[in-house]
Length: 211
Image (cartoon, rainbow, N blue to C red; front, side):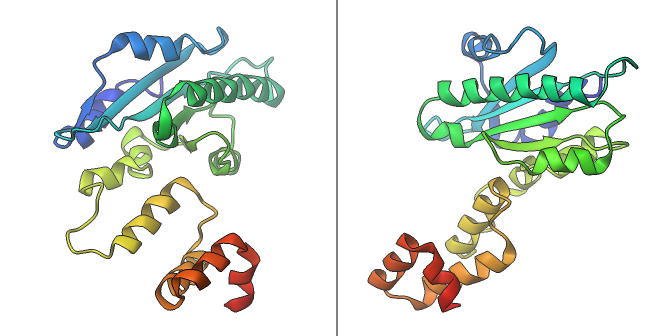
């Protein structure tokens, strides 16, 4: 299995600053929402150690094995539909703002190209997705995920501009927040007054026209 020892690898990255969910009953409750066709699956929940507020990050791991020569792209699409349906159910079940900290780690058949994997990874519906690329090992995979930044400190370097931190965290979850768009918003936040900024936020097109 491609995701063998995945949890152990994640633990190596975040063990100094994060702890894992010990409520196996809740994890089982979320796992039981999955369709029976999803055979290789798991849920990892973790939160920053020593923080009074329980803000949990939920990582859903799925491996789709499609090595049967009689099965093709259509079969993978059917299985992915089941996976995304499960993700939607989990998102509805997670309480409050925690559903924004929902991630999918996905391993697919080697028959899929890198481009196809990246196309799936780029979709933002339901949650942030990371797809294991062909010939990519687990360490390389995890280094591309949000966990790599957690290793360096989720809240960023001391003294760093809070606005920069906010943009970095948002960009991690939403690919549409491009560098060009960040420049526009940074300029807006630094140059516009409260009422002017309010108008820009309420009317998105005004930002593009102004800059």
